[in-house]
Image (tube, rainbow, N blue to C red):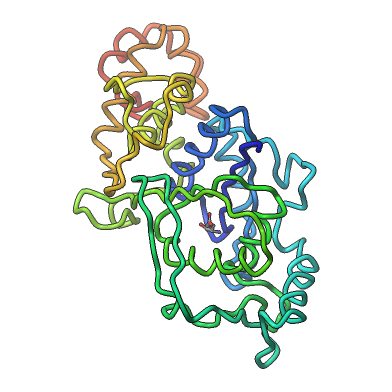
Length: 326
Ligand code: GLU
């Protein structure tokens, strides 16, 4: 079976660095297994929809070189890749469940009839552990809302199935939704993908990474003068570790060594000081010519743009971010 993985962001604002972090593992896992990496836009929550964020998602992946094989702006055989363009698909499958007595209408919405006896479990690739939920903890949940839009718990499963996703790599805040997903797979008698729930990214005070910790949208790192290679290297080290203990390595090297067994299931600490250090290391490893080129591009409207050649040897050993140059 071909390895097919997806990142499925909701366009509710600028893409978070945590989304890029997950996408990096999708990308690496796909490359490692000669598989496909897919971008799907989960835009069914119309109240939280922010139109510009989709463009920012495309731009973020482009900047970082995390090229997806299929997606709304690149096409593919399994599209459309925007959930808002697939409403009739969800309707068809919801109707099928109703017809088979596995879902029912409830004031214009459709609810899934959950099993109440027994347990639902799966083995997660992160930490190689079995996760089990009592079915009695799962309520009959809405799969199709009265406005015709599906809920995340339904659309996500229907699309993962139709897009032939083999491995679902996502944040562990979705662990509690997974039993619902598994019940939907079972209701349709669909093959279940493997799950890898990545640990929570935490800030310096060990609470979930948020704006409070200075967590920025992914593109803000670009604006502040972080290099793509340094960001990817830094993100790779969050949760995963190189089997030979290396700290500085390329994306190709990560692809070569990646294995979920080297993933630490405990939370991953987003240490900005480490990112700054790594970025400085990448700057120092560049040739003067290469550094001049990236700096000059970075200094969009600055008066010294085009005149920085003699300054390069003076700054190269001292700056950590391109913005430090100014
Ligand atoms: N749309 C969900 C999100 O915003 C996708 C979660 C998943 O990967 O299943 O993170």
